[in-house]
View 1 (cartoon, rainbow, N blue to C red):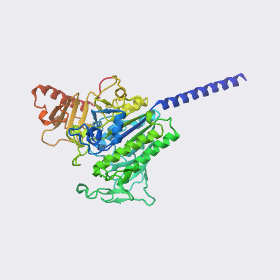
View 2 (tube, one colour):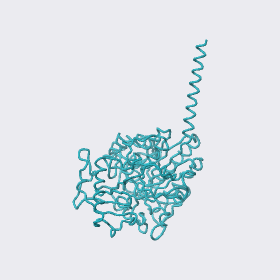
View 3 (spheres, rainbow, N blue to C red):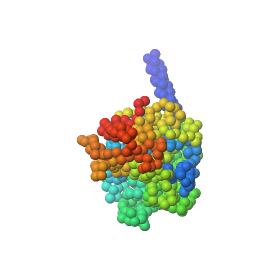
View 4 (cartoon, rainbow, N blue to C red):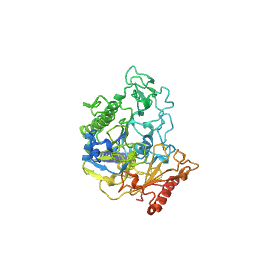
Length: 512
């Protein structure tokens, strides 16, 4: 009898302990904020009306009231950079917390049938968040390869994609709206747009490139009912539905939502209307209409969070994958900066980065601290209370100290920049920016490094420019200090440091 009671008491105590642990875990999870990261496609500083008003002429060519409102409610970073000046490398970095030269595919566009640059040695922000109790969801353009076995044939199921890399739920466009497959995939399975949909070859008109000489030969596999003007509305409505459902069913469980908008990449096919707002024809040009559509998407996400009572406990980040475009006459996406998307100059990678977290981040605040988009990875790890292996996540800093005006924490000792396909590179150290490139002839493009020869190509590069960005943010060539004898030692040291960082694969961060 005594033995039975003893066992019963033991089981009761163990059950109580298990219950307390479970309650503690729930309480701990509920204290963690939700995380929403919205990454626009091809948005430069000059595509946001707040920054347009700060330009040399102050001319506003398109209003972005919802993005401007984020700036008013949170912190804007005036020295924020995309990890690369082109799409796929940045998307790799935003998930892994590493500059793209650390993988085997540091350049260019990664087609959906190509191998992903996210090698097994890397982790992802989704895996980190998930380990910390977050529910994870991805919406939008994936653009990281390894999605299809063959992009020229109908493929009703993705081979990898966002779910493979740690997201619980994914509603994705493998290559955005610009390349095949022109179709949506939910949790790796094709989602027919209509009951009679089939995966077929689409012509240039149906994919949205009609009348554009540069893209006259575009075609590819897609949903037979594909309409590029509806891509944005479908994406944002799915993301809003996810937030609404989460607020109704699991309001205390934290989630990480990564939204990669289709806007404003070509083809510029704005929606007719979105959320009751006229889009197409509203701004005087299809490029600016797409910026307008993106701004409305921002507003819809914020409204959904507020409607569900989630906004106050959400870190909301808005940023871009690279600098803006250049072919919209009268509209300067680079906002007086030199260069555009694909360039190693500031206009190619200096981008909007805005963080809002009510009652945690001071409203209408500004940070001049140099940061990189992939700093979201270490920040997510901190919020999820997960340790980082610094041999795996090498270039990402936790932004929470900066966001809360805490002087502690790591910073970037160096920033690394690259042109879209090489072979121009830049090293940033403090206000100093050294650009290096080929001396006349063509050099190896593949990251200027291989496993067997990590210095391939690098030794052939020469200094092209040295700028002090504190006094010459626009990189005016008349203030290029390359020929200044007083800077000769700095130039040599910076070039050597760049090569050292590439060859040794050492961290770009300061010590703790």
